[in-house]
Each structure stands twice: as C-alpha cells, then as structure tokens.
Image (tube, rainbow, N blue to C red; front, side, top):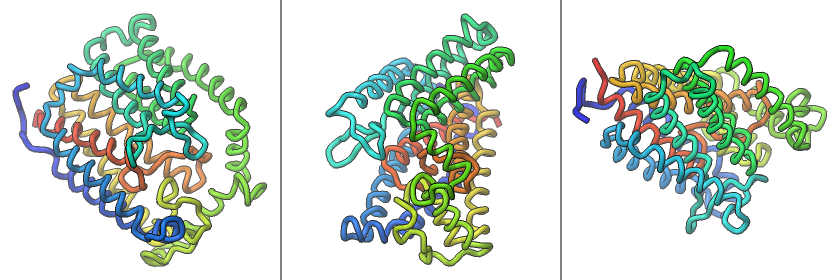
Length: 367
C-alpha cells in the first residue's frame, strides 16, 4: 500500500496514550501496594508486572504501527478462526483457568492470556474487512445483516460460556456500532433489540449471581456485606475524595475494604486520592482519545481503514464508559477493566496493540 497523506502517526493520540499509561502506572502502585505486601510480601509486586506488561505492549504498539493496516484485511479470516479456536480451548478443563468465577484464561508459563480480549480485536478486524467489501448488502437482512449478527452472537455465546458478561457486552456493543454505521436498516435493529432484550432477561434469570448483582445495584444496602459490598466500598472511596482528593497514596479503601482495588475499581481509588479534579482530567483524556480516534476514522483513505479505526476507538470508549459507570454506581457490576489504567496483562497488551493499528491508520490520513 502506497502511503498518501501526512506519513506520520497522530502525535496527539500518542501523547494521550502516554499520559493514560503514566497515570495508570502511578495508580496501580498506589492502589495495590497494601494488597501486594499482604499477599506476596512485596509492595512492588503488581506495579513491576504492570511495567512489564506495559513495556511489552508499548513495544508491540510501535512494532504494529509500522505495518500497513491493509495487511490486517488480508489475514482477517485466519485471525478470526484462531480467535474462535482460543475461545473453545479456554472452555476445556485443564486448559482454561478459573479466576473470579469465570473460566476465561489460558496459562502460558508464569503468565496467562485471556482469549476474549483477542476476540474483541479479531472480530473488529474481520467485520471491518467484511463490511468494507459488502457494505452494499448490509441493508439486506439475508445477505448482510443476519450473517454479521450471527457471527457476533456466536462469539458472544462462547464468551458467555466462561461466563464473562462484561467482555461480551463490550464486544457486542462495538460490533453493533460498526454494523449501524455501515448502514443497516433501523427496522432490523429494532427487531434485534427486542430479541436482545429477551435474551438479556433470560441470561439474568438463568444465573442467580446475576440476579444478585441487579438487586445489589438497585439497593446495595440490602446486603452490605455480600453482593452490595463492592459498590458501597467504591462509593465510600469516591465520596470522601471531594474536589481535590485525600492526596496521592492516602486512600483508606485500599486497606482491605475494596477487593483487588488495582483492577476493576481503580477509578474509585483515583477519585478518592485525586478527587473530582483528578477524575475529570482522566475522563478528559479519554474524551480526547475518542475525538482523535473519530478524526482518524473520518480521515482514513478507504472504507476498511474507516471501519477499523472506528471499531478500535469504539471498543476503548465503550469499555471505559462501562467501567466508570460501574464504579460510580450507574450500572450493575460487570467485571471489566479500565483501559490503560487497570492492572492486567493480556488486556493492557492487546489494548496497546489495538492502538498500534489505529496509529498506523492515522499515518495514511487524507489531510
């Protein structure tokens, strides 16, 4: 693919990613050193591993950034097949590892990977290629809409067998965004929405722990030491933070009140220590990321690049919105990380790989 346009990556996006990673590294240490000292006798345990993940992810990001993004279109099918194989493997006892009640991990030496994270990116790449080549059929239920939706919900079904509702929600919402932008009919979405609502009610009703999460969301004080514990402790963290926060490192909730505060609820610790101003600045960085991602999508020279950039930035923003909404009590607990900030291996590394693709698309900008 011959380069046209500005030939350089979006430096604003690079600066945003660097800022979020820096904030994340500081907050992983601040939120985890108490737990790390208690569990492993090493207060730096989590932040050292996060530095390793971030280093590998940043190296992968710059490496992937050098590959013309159209190469991903060429290998979209093999990538998707590999992602489905990994999702099947994780369900096999002895291969899949159980953490937090979900069999979502495959152990690789001293580390582990989460196949559902690979599926999010793999499905974005495949759908971008499919929609770019078949956009004229997307208004047809039989030739366009149904095959894409069937593929998405097959992946969602495998993820739910783990089960991992949070990651499944991010995947479905991201893919629906792509299908909608591609020009699918409103009537098809209305029908899908009704079916999806019924399916969602069934998923909730079929698992007692999901019903408990809904109940805890509506009234966490009904079971303050059980299902309502996390959200109550999260609000106890954010509330005292006030405007300026208690100060970096001064959180009280990380002292064994908020479970594993370095992962899903890291934003609560950030709000407690850095206050409303700190939280607003972080949200501002995510809004800036969204703006640059949309701009990259609009300026891409072809449909594949536009869909690919839109899918990646939508995935990041949707996951961010869900995570922060859980932390501040707007939606029930789903169990997904905050991109760039939360402690995590495959999540952080795959997120940075996704950004590498996005940066390469920006290098082919039409302006």
